Length: 164
Image 1: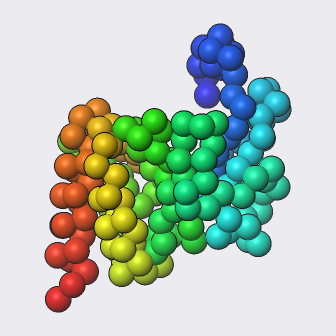
Image 2: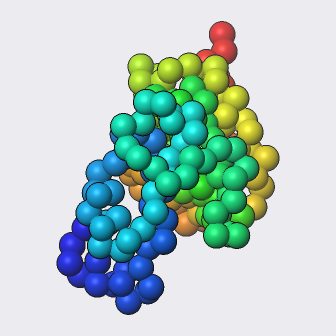
């Protein structure tokens, strides 16, 4: 993160929580935790193997700061990968959902999935969140409209690939 970005975050009041969607996303956690005196949260399903001391472990339907709901994914490359639903309209994803071209969501490649069937079930659960407008992906192009529609399309395409 650039100094400019750090200064901007400081001007907004800093960072209370750093939420790690999975153990592959530690990146700059130590530095940001030190600068902002933040707490760190990670997925409960990885608690025994995470490799980082978290202040809180998150699981399905946990609530953070009254505006962020935790959604967990099974079947991705790490157990219990986290997604965050902010104010019921913005989904922040980890690795399972990505977008390598504008306005089109895709999934993590099958070869990296622990269980395509479990991943499909996770995506189907996500279809229930009909108010999603924006999808901020961990890898690729963000979507700023029609998020729920794109999630449903992703689920449908994924299901076609996983069922004979």
